[in-house]
Amino acid sequence: MKIAIIGGGLAGLTAAAYLSDSQDTSGTVFERSPQLGGRAFTYEKSGFTLNYGAHAVYGIDRHTLQQMEQELGLLFQSKQVDKRKVMYAKHGHLTPAPLDFINIMKTDVLTAMEKVRFVAEIAAVIGNLHQLKRYRTLGEYLDQSGASADVKELWAHLVCSNFFITPEDARKVSGEVIADYYHNLFLSQKPVNYILGSWATITDQLVGKINGNKQWDIAVKEAVESIAMENGKFILRTKTREAVEFDRVILAMPVQQVCKLLESSPWAQALNPYKENTCTEVLVYDVGFSKVVARPFHYISDMDNKVFISDVSATDHTIVPEGGQLLQGIAYLNDEFGDEEQKKQYLESKTLQMEALFDTYYPDWREHTAVKRVSKKAMVSSVKNIHTNKLLPNKLTGLPFLFCGDGCEGKGELAERAFSSGRAAARMLLAEKAETKALVH
Image (cartoon, rainbow, N blue to C red; front, side):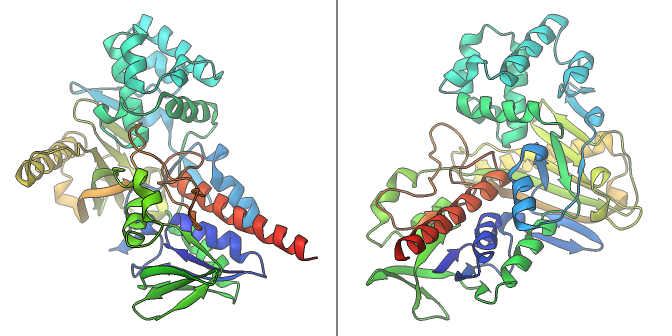
């Protein structure tokens, strides 16, 4: 079976690693960019390792990465963020983030009676008894919950933090999605971890696995321009290859790119329900310091402005030169604007809010900045997981392709959905191959 995988991000590399583990498959991974990893791309500058987004993993002990580590023979280390050094800033006051029962008792974001209610809600989520899962959206649940304004704000802020969206969008997330997510996270013994060495630790090993099978190759800077079917085979065309024949194709790319690639094909109509999907974008502000400027806490989330700063190097020491420090600021963004000028002003205001948070908790940071990178619209997820969007299944009725990526159905959110959907797509093809082989014999 000769397989084409279009997209060399986390999902495409995962699918290829599983498929190339079978010696009687062959294939090519096509990636239009000059580097692999997609939005998990990592690069070094002045001794600092910078990621296009965070390399935090939520609930790693219950994560698809644990299965991949065993099944593919991956080897990586991770370190847990110190929960006691995760803080919320509200009206200029720092207080412990209510991430577990100890911090809930210490936090000032809830009154004593509100803490009792919130602990009861967490217990219900852990026991899979919470009413939230029966509501179409978080907003509908909160409107009917009878909870105080502070409890409602906390629920919305938690969803903001884990889904990288604004409070307005947090209210649009499906109650079932949120209930499943927090059921898994609250049961985890390792709620927030960083992969030491960043995503490159994972992607490099996946690439090594693929390259270990001589029947597989990886083509970077080679976008697939069209797909057709002739005599039961897929014919792919790129700028450098006139016509290449494959038995199966996996589309491991954002849904928006899938729709564009297939817009003139006979399969375009089947993708219409997914064409209007919106993506999750954030403002990312990375600063690397030549020395440790300050280390008041490892994570500070500004509840008023919906921006947060992670001291990434406090958890992952491998990403800074000796004695250095790396902070990553993230701002959740609205995506509805009257015109480009309004959008420009809004993004500038979020940048200033981020710098004000740096000024407050990391004094003299400007003086010691060795590396700075600001990305004012960085895509976190190709499909924002709100109820008006539709995640793409691994297999869609009427289409001969398989799909994977963070915009597809799968376990978890963000990067985990990329890993889990890539794994699922590969396993589908391997099962199909085994079934065909059994019928032949």
